[in-house]
Length: 99
Image (tube, rainbow, N blue to C red; front, top):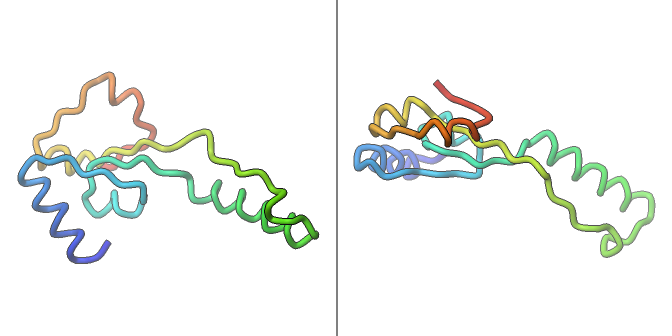
């Protein structure tokens, strides 16, 4: 995350504005919530499709797929700093916690 994004996250947290990302690396840098695909699973799926193309399949013949499961991550340091109080119901949907 670049300096401008870090500044935005800091300002948003102080103003008690929720920040959300789809890039898991940004969660370690202060973004409050993330809905992110597993990078390993995306790479594996990409590799499988590339292998089909290398074996002669036409790219247009390969079906579009997406990952069934996304990780929901919360940064509890940011939650505390911004005085956010996630509900117990929301916390049940969280798959990763940054403390």
